[in-house]
Figure 1 (cartoon, protein in one colour):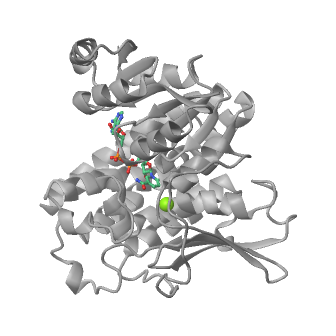
Figure 2 (figure 1 turned 90 degrees about the vertical axis):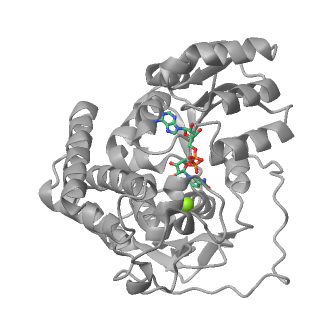
Length: 391
Ligand code: NAD
Ligand code: MG
């Protein structure tokens, strides 16, 4: 029986994970559930899934969570704060951690799970983008394993021999990451000047949280995923290519030196990747409808438009620069996306903010987590200054 901590249980990935877990009560148990501030949603999930521990990130809401759980007759321990989330990720109540918090807020708990030797199901791509070498080192020292949940990386993991081998020795030539292109595929820059947060969050194929939805619309999501693939599979940047595929059925591909190309296909539903990662190396049903290729629309592929969707080009640039440039890129992007979602920044200016901050803070080597935290804060401060000057 796998004991699973779901960090970010009230989110889109959290909900999909709980759905798969509930289909297999004989194999999986949700033992820890966490949320940011949504006490009502967390209490409801606890009533349904009966975890041993519920944690709300905002300490001011702990009493309210305890009150709601008591009123609903739910018997589970209650805690609060980010330290409690990281402690639970490393603690004895779980052997598996689903890292589904959004943004840099997920880094400490991902690291804690890695250090403690858990099976880490990584959805929180921001933690590997920020701290790739540190997270991989923590996994090595802790003796745990990382199974990618991001659909593209889960697809590549499935198409590689034995999970994550040496790419060159395995005859891998390229990793081809597919991208849906987001809601604004095919638009010109002029057509993007006044798009709204709601338009950006209306993804044609996937239903996701608002931050990743905006990242999908700018193609920064694919940029973060290129960096994620680089770390997860030790792939040189020249061996990673992005391919726009609006049907979102081919989740990514691996090209071998003999000309073979292996792909993983499926309906666009994160429960497939989650079921794969939860049960690996076995397989369990996920509740996702079988893919009906004969009835599907034709599969189309095209190169990304890097001149219009500059965030993807900036992510490649940060990866080439190396060091902590990806962490700087990520921090600036988080600040810019928040401002866009608040109606305080035009869509096209997200890339401008990221570019300014990358220029202002040239890359430094990643030394340790404290220094990385300082650089993350410096990038956020710089991004807020750029925002103030722009408005
Ligand atoms: P979401 O916004 O729907 O959910 C985020 C969860 O994190 C919520 O439970 C929220 O309470 C919690 N959270 C938010 N801020 C927090 C904070 N400061 N401290 C503690 N908890 C906090 O997001 P999502 O779409 O589920 O995405 C989660 C992560 O998974 C992101 O990193 C995203 O890039 C990645 N991901 C998502 C999808 C998808 O289909 N949704 C696919 C691939 C990867
Ligand atoms: Mg993805």
